[in-house]
Amino acid sequence: MGSCKFYLALENSNHTDYITEKVNAPYVTGTIPVVRGAKRENYEEFAPADSFIHVDDFPDAKSLAEFITELDKDDERYMQYFSWRRHYKAAPHLLSLNNEFTLPICSACDYVSKHRGYSVVHDLNDWYFS
Image 1: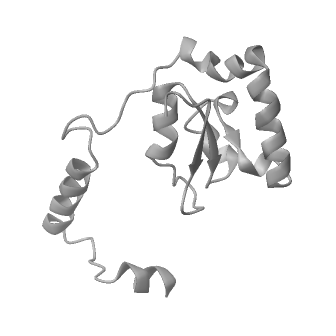
Image 2: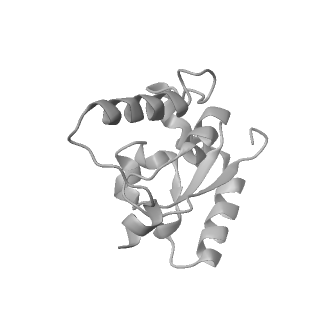
């Protein structure tokens, strides 16, 4: 990924706050994420607005491709997408057990099992779509 200038960070769901490691990985490797998923405003709650390209900012795939092609040719404009690095640092994910999703999920399951105010859903698909 580090050898690429752009990375398609396309989420498989379009839900508020559903922003995964697909966005973090390009930041760590020095690549511009091209995102699709939550709305731009939602991404901006987690990342600087000028650090990614949002698919919804373009009327169609052709316009997006033309923009990326032009940006690829303009080094100065391209580097502006990395100005956030003066103030922030992207941390690699999944480097140890403490960084993995496993620990928080197990902690949540343990908490839910010990506190009666929570319910168990045995079929997420049925629960979500009902």
